[in-house]
Image 1: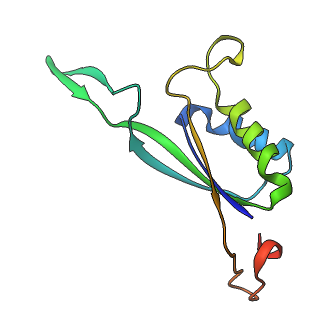
Image 2: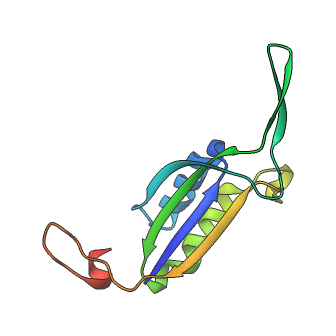
Length: 117
């Protein structure tokens, strides 16, 4: 089992959800987060004053999958999250982290392991 954490741009969420649905991944958790990487923020003007915004709005997806779904899930997120002409991607499209998942327990009936996902 793996825990996949993806940080993507908010406007790409629907495309990612559709791509995940296409590979039969239907369970995920979504959270609004802020951060920055190579983009290093941007400059905005508010009431005539220049403001440097270094924390950008992003969306975090948490997805627990069994081994057979790891690569299809990564491919689906990549496909849905890429922006730019021809889907080549741009800086700021996001990151995907794959972590080992030791155990999962379904609270309602106590099922553990891959069956609980």
